[in-house]
Image (cartoon, rainbow, N blue to C red; front, side):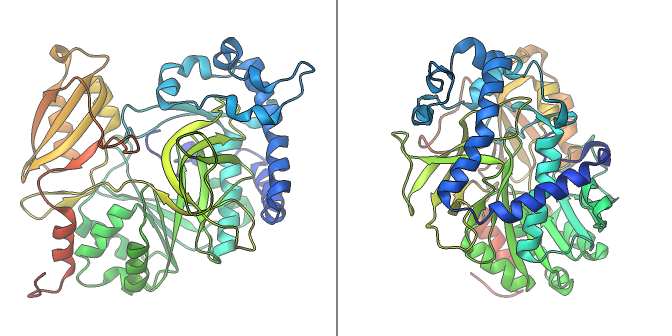
Length: 473
């Protein structure tokens, strides 16, 4: 699986009895969301303790390095004051140490294993293994709590715009599933989910979603921005959507207000990752992001490694509490967030803003406008690249800047890569290739941009699209 958020529910079959686990988990979440900070800290440590012992005893990366040794006293009890002595786990370590990060044994009640890979939007894709407990059952329960917060009805139809790769899905069609997630079906929540590839031109996406007539829409922000800019007939507003869910990119307050005004419904933003699963959602009461602290420990730290106070921006270190197949202890999530004050009846950890990055659209001469999804599988297969940056450099062309990895440039299949992106993006695309030694970042906090727009000014272009005919900027 590549860049899947939420995961693609491989096989769409729920394990027997998994809905009972989900229901029991949800019953717990309904209580723990009101725990005061001290009680929540105790709750998290009760989950962390067996995870840390498991990592120390069953995961070669931790067992052989002694990385967790500072935590354990002579009597084998845990000294929580030494928590910050554990160095953050970097993305590079996750990539290099993949085999040694895999657990040699697992608890019996964690279900099947799933191998996922990231989209590579911040560099070379990283692989991670999750158990069914972490990636399916806990996730399903957390979303059900979200639905209760926001009064969402999962028995109605959801249009889910998903960044499919070419081999995963016919990008010209739709795929209808029974149930938003398979675990919901035994709970009598079997609303249809209609999957639509979001790599299609924005005008086609608008028309396709309008034809499906969903009650809810889930979409990445850039795709939604393109759709609204091209929806001159107000087809999306005419749907009278009950709500829109966004994920995967930063949502500004201005954009949220624009969407809610245009579509006359609420926008709810979800936050998570392939590595650390789903772990935050906007709250309908306070408007901030609440971290799902029952399943993940999130630290927001400054450059010295200390917790940041409310109102300040910190770098996120994330420890998924149910990731036994591949424990990620203090994983550097490569994102930043602004900590919020505790002013809500829901007492879960809060962020006023989660800072991510938007992906600029590619705009071609005939007006075709797409949100380009990095074709990760093809990049690995045809280019064997360690890292790639793809930039639109002209009206009809883009450039692949390749940092070589598993393939020497003489063995790279440039024609096959060109044909692939022409199929999924635009048939007239001209593609250039350039080998580079590395990439520089504008600042230490800046994410690597795998997709870059270097020809158009997307904001200006989208602004013109949004204006009625005859109106000038």
